[in-house]
Image (cartoon, rainbow, N blue to C red; front, side, top):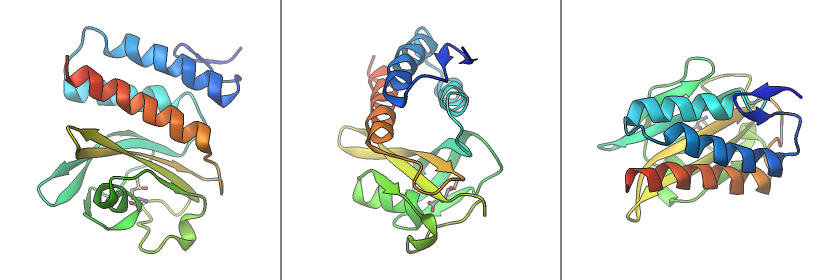
Length: 162
Ligand code: SME
């Protein structure tokens, strides 16, 4: 068994996400610091899969600004409606992009990224930020990832409300 934190990385995705949800609740339990929690969440996800980049962008005025992440250095500011992340913010919709090379306006922070999943982080109907995941493989994300990552984001947001 290969473990990343508390996660068995050899499990099928759906089960890995179940374990991740439990692990994330444990990590956030008893800690309210915004930066500490997003940093640990990015690390937990990154080390549970083989993704190239996992991190957050947060809405600040008319831009998304880079938050905590794991992976190579990334662009720091993204305008609303620009790239995959800015589109997720503008539309308040998950963006599952099997091939970033054909996504109009994709922002290539890393030439290695081939597919991307971006989940809006919404509180009281307003997008506060996005969770962005990049893969070096084409078509690396499926509905398990959409559901699993959305559930993890829900855990983070529900924690803010406590
Ligand atoms: N590719 C993203 C930019 C962020 S990096 O992938 C970390 C986009 O098009 O919004």
